[in-house]
Length: 248
Image (cartoon, rainbow, N blue to C red; front, top):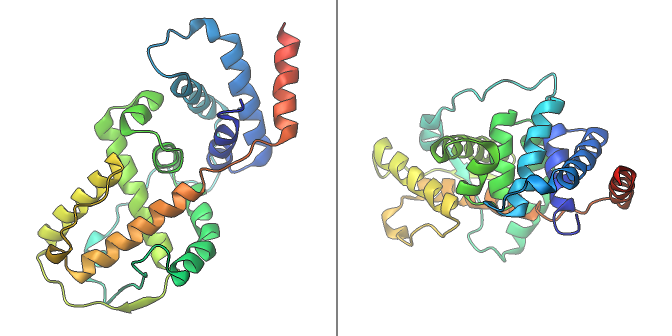
């Protein structure tokens, strides 16, 4: 609970969108882990097993909001590559303007994450906020890695689009390549994010339009990582310990 309580609580908050339900999910997750510890066979990390319990409980508790759609509508990526403007994002991570922008966008990011359909929200939270690998996310959710990647890529693009609307724009230069080339670069960028590595330094081969889009994706990734630091309220940890004591 000391190692993973805050992250489980953050996961629950973003999945349920309700503090009371989130606290209930955290309590039930650790109580079940305590009761079923003898069933843990050690074929995965204890943390993976713990998050698997949390994911299943979320589905069982039906942490779905009434306004939540069942799926994300397809994004018009043509418009992203052909729009007349692009996000004006400083390239230097230490740039005061970038840091201020990041601070102001956090609330919008939280709102956008909570409003993702759960099938997309869960992979996004596990991978880009909590830092799980694609393989671990697939194990937690009981999905194929290819399915996790598809949902993760879609979620990232939705968040990028949401945040781009809140960022100052600048005139976009003419497209330097065909849409197919840009889409191939986008897939490579997503794969780099999946692996947690920097996109290959081939900036001379990437047009300004793609560079601006990838910069907005990097900003979204960095802001997601900022959300990983979550504390478990003392009242919740006390309730968990009380529940466990009551089972002995």
